[in-house]
View 1 (cartoon, rainbow, N blue to C red):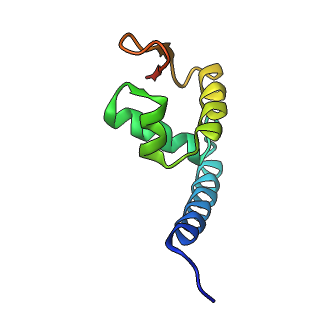
View 2 (cartoon, rainbow, N blue to C red):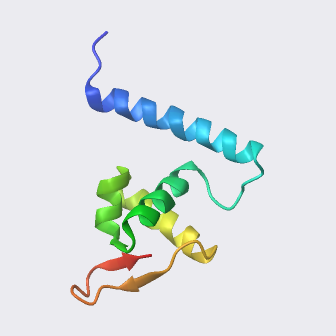
Length: 93
């Protein structure tokens, strides 16, 4: 059976997120899930970033990322604001 690299990376990502979610649950951390933790990790290292740059850094699709960021903002995990340089872009911190 032939698999391409993208498929295998996707499978690794799914397994990693599943394991991270198990570890978070074991430690009674319910504020965020594995994918959201990845976003928080990237933001903690990089500071403010555009949604586009977060997508590049995390490998998350823009559609998934947008809904995740909305949930994270409601929980107070992140803050979003319009970019001063490009009003079409949103900055996340």
